[in-house]
Image 1 (tube, rainbow, N blue to C red):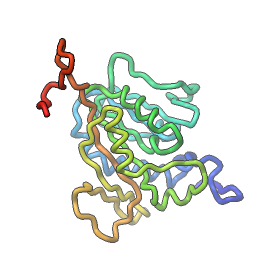
Image 2: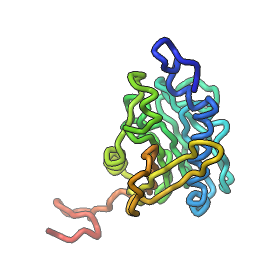
Image 3: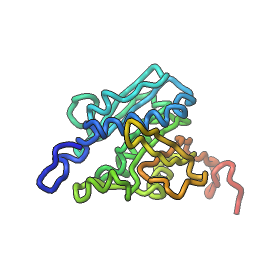
Length: 226
C-alpha cells in the first residue's frame, strides 16, 4: 500500500494501483481474463486504466493496433497529456476494449461509461473489471472519495448506454505469490467460502434498433406487436 496519511489512507486513492500490490492486482486480473481476450476477433484494442503507469504497463494482447488511455477525476488522458472531456477513436472504433476500475472510481461514472461506449466499434466487445462494494480492497479506502458499483448496478448502466451484457464473472486475484487466482462465471455455483474481491463483465456493443420508415408508430424490426 502507498504511504498512509494520518487517517491511514493513501494521499490519492488511485495511486494504490501504482504500488506493488495494486499493480499485481491489475496484472492478475488481466491474466485471468487473457484466455477470454485472445478469443476476441479484430485488430484494434483499447486499454482504459485508472492511472498513467497502469496504462503504460497494461499487458498486450494479440491485436496489432493499440491505444492506451487512463482516467482521472479531471478527465481523460493519453500518456502524459492534459485531460480532455472525452476520448475519441475517430472513424475506427475498438474491436476490443478493456476498462479496469475506471467506472466506479469517482462521481460521473455514467458519463465515463457513455464515452467508453463511443470508443467501441459496433459489434465490438468490452470487458469491465470493478471491486465489489464490500471487497476487502474497498474497505482500505473508506472515506477516501472512491465509489463502488454493485454488479447489478453496473450491468444496468451498461444496458442504458447501449451495451448488451453477455457474461458476468467473479474474480479472485492472487492473495500472495504462493496462491493462484480464480475466475468463475456467475451462473456457476460458487463455494460458500469464496471471497468476493472483484468482478468482471463482458459486454457487446449492439447496433441501434432499426425502425420502419414512414409508419407513424413503427415497432423496431424483429419485435412482434404486443
